[in-house]
Image (cartoon, rainbow, N blue to C red; front, side, top):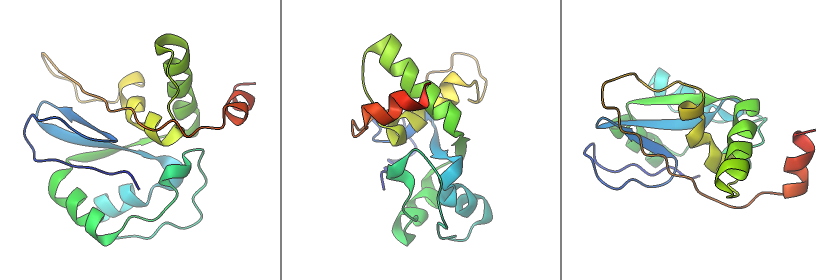
Length: 142
């Protein structure tokens, strides 16, 4: 699974997270929400029957990754399937780049207006992965 969390300071960040005014927010697909449920319950909850276009997020959260998230992440924001598809479409049409569904999850909170509000808010979004079946993706747009 792609989770990477650095220290809570303004530093370069890695895959699937955003640094917002010194806070770390992680995106997660609502159809594969074990990390979200685990984060909010404080206990590691295994993934059961994930139903998501974001195939890179279908695996269960591991104990080491859960520990890092618990220590370093401030919040996890869920993304719905249609929002992930809109993010992928936005990236394709506006930026001319192909990003797999799991990588596009990190853009959803920005496009859907779910970031914390604040003066002079600076947001960094990491887009990753090009493992996408374009035919299947275009079929979802019909």
